Amino acid sequence: MDTSNERTASLMTPAKLAQVASTVRAPISPAAFLDQMAADAGHQHVNRLSELRTQLQEQSTSSRAAAVEPVLDRLAQVLPSLDFDLLQPKGLWATVTGKNRTAGAEFAAQVEEIDSVIKTLPAELSALFRQEQPHAAAGDRTLVELEVEYRALDKIIDQGARWLQDMRNQLKTREAQAGADTGAQEQIRADNARCETLVARLKLLRAAVAAAQQVHQQTRASADRRLGLQASLQKALGQEAKEWRSQLGTLARAAAEGKTSGLNLDGPKEAHKHLRRRLDKLLAECEQLRTQEDSQAQCLSILGEQLSAAA
Image (cartoon, rainbow, N blue to C red):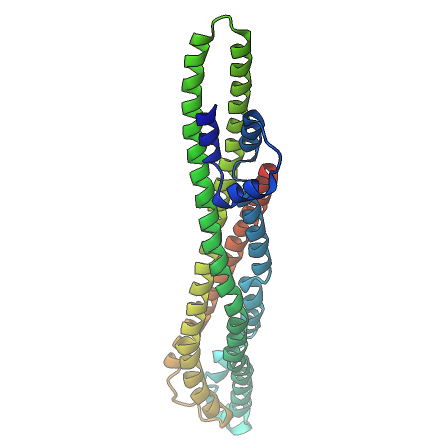
């Protein structure tokens, strides 16, 4: 029993051993000790994982997708309104009557409406990124600790599995030697029951570890998608949006003055098409991030259930 006792004690963390040493004053029987450890293996790690899960839930409450989408939606609402047909030549009579200038002014107004939305994007998105930075840093630290805890729990499971195998081998030997000794048979039955208790405990811990691993993967994937979305937004502002403002700004000024005759519209049209295409991709990335965040939330919920079962 001393050997079995020591092997069961190896399932305990150093902190748990210190806690037992400091709190248990009265002598405790080896049987009671084994019963407690079989039912309580990994308890401290389970508690800490529960705390870390709560932290991850709090850190993920402000969805990046939910924050960015309204900003992009405003651009998506005005971008299709730009009508290049207003700049098509309408003949000499339209020039004489001022219809060309009127159409040009309408086109310039459409450009100005879109441009006013584009101009607000850098400041709005920068503010969102600044708000996200503390949450991202805290989330990284939480993920590191989450991995440390579930790996420690995994080691306890491995130790417990080895202890079980060793104990069952011993029980087979003891059963063969017990013969008609009722006392020995009773002790064997008690040790078999302890083994089954530990089997049940290890199953709960395995489920908790698997759920924690899923949370780690899904949370990391969400963080990667957020970084990817941020990079895409910065690229769009530095390339497509900048080119759009340059091409369409020049064209709008000419249109407002009625000087569109002979202008090459290919460049502005291409810039407009590229911006719309980029916006569609950004909105698709937002939707992908939202889906990823939903998966993360679901995994956090499952982890909560598994940790409650193992608490």
